[in-house]
Image 1 (cartoon, rainbow, N blue to C red):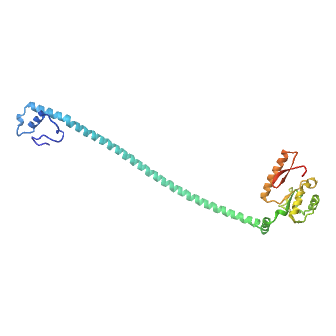
Image 2 (image 1 turned 90 degrees about the vertical axis):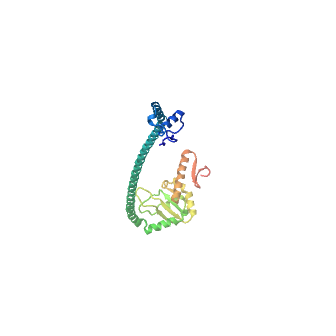
Length: 285
């Protein structure tokens, strides 16, 4: 607060004053020079009016500004509180989600352990069953005679062998028809061995594999096999080389192609030669 006789230099009452205001201020703020009872009623009214004007012009705007700032601060504080509550709510939701995630992970681990246990148990049971079946099968399928036969089949030379299909079969087959078959072909080959392939089944005809003494004999018999079509006894008999399973598949493809060519061109003749189906001219038949 300003001392008596001194016009304030700061605060709402600082600033520019006109001469009358300054004079009135000095007269009212210096009691040593002017006594209150000497102040006229007019001066007192002017001083009150001046004080009211200064209050309206200077104090009120400051108070209004301070109120506005306080209101804004209150609004900001309210918004901050709301944001803080939202943040707390989000944190709680995050904590809940994390707890749920941990629970799901625990459940997943439990299920994984259960699946692993089930798989191990199933694998053990399957292996036990497989071992039992394999042991039973091995007792028959891996018999010494079958092993020797498999080794012999893998190592034998097929170039001297032929396989006869459609030859009449019987349980005690002793190749009784072979001499007559050779007579039909006008050949007397040296046969090293002859055996039926597979077990005898009534109503079916097993192929017969013949091992000849040389490849020349095999080639000679194969070149005359078409003569069997003219024989009443052997018209349904067919002779082929001793082929592997892969070669038999390839041969079946060629035979199918041969039939298709014959159906497509009835007036022409075809044969399998060199792994291909070729047309046979009338002069080379």
